[in-house]
Picture 1 (cartoon, rainbow, N blue to C red):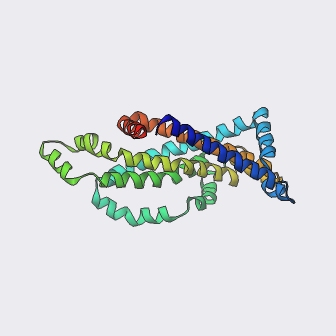
Picture 2 (picture 1 turned 90 degrees about the vertical axis):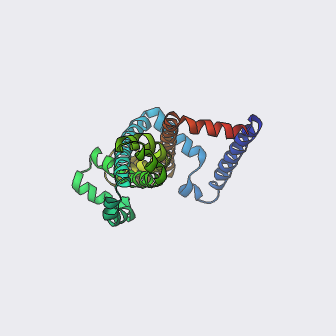
Picture 3 (picture 1 turned 45 degrees about the vertical axis):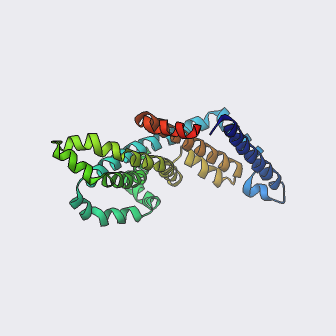
Length: 261
């Protein structure tokens, strides 16, 4: 994509955003819709109030810490288990129905149980976020490991490579694209786990801001907190993409070459 097309794309996105905001602002003035959907100006004022008072930075920092720790724990655990089971077909077949059962269970439903087990502290939110992230990363890692060419592994093994060589030289480099696909998908789910935990049992965090504003029938406050959650999710996505570009420089080069065509 050349610079002219890129500028046109950004202009179209900006025009669409402005159009939606104007439509929202106008629609909120009809009847009593402002009670249900608020308005962009009221939401902006509420968000600015949170920023000015320092409440947003305080609560967003707590949610970010919970989501990041849950993301790191669940992501690393998912990669490790996916790698081990991907290289061991027997254990994968034994554990497959159990993983399927746990994966099919909505992780949000575990929140009340986690409150009983781990209390209402920050640990509960971290564990809930980690449990939500784990299965997404595990499934992508497992699929990536199992998709490595068997013929290639056989040839390298015949050349004298041991299991460590296979993992470091073939399996992990081949599966890393799948791993980062799982990590990108799990970023919003890490936030979901943290925010849901805060909504259920917490007096701090962005989830608490949402539930507190809803309890006060403050629609603008709810949207302002949601805006903060979206901004935090975008920052986490950018961080994952930067890590991907650092660990997979060849992919960034391919994307740059395609963009210039």
